[in-house]
Image (cartoon, rainbow, N blue to C red; front, side, top):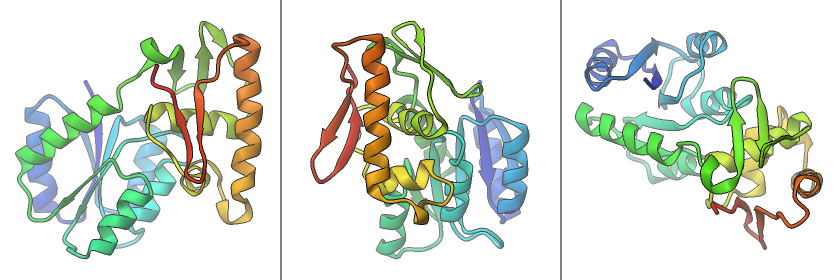
Length: 220
């Protein structure tokens, strides 16, 4: 049973969403603020987060970055804002979906299911086995000895096989203070990560470089 973290400061909306999710078989946890959500995330592992953009303390976009600091987490944003800039920003930082208020709870549940299907493990086709709780990745049956940043990069790519992730996106998802790092830092760690994959299989090159765009993981 998938576990969903709902971060919404409007209690009536949260109750309606939780009811719809539970009726469809999901476990839910509700937080009224960003700080409360971070506390819950330290105690439990969630399969997906639904974040209101306009929270009273931490903005939804900033909260998304914090929740993804240690692991890849699918995210759906909820917002009352109609501005195109907000939708674009949400998608640029890696949102898996974006739903404006008011919305149908049934539609939200359908989108949750769709995002979880897209985010499902792709081990059979890629040769990777990812234990997100233990922060451990095996490749073709062998444990990879990864640094923190190598693990973060590979986990981010595994979460969306075939999708091109830009260097700035990867910096935001993997590095604590990405303002102190450069896009060249990503390139350097990708290079060492590729070397470790080739130690397992000399012919393997599952990480694709897209010139001027970023990197993707070959879905097989």
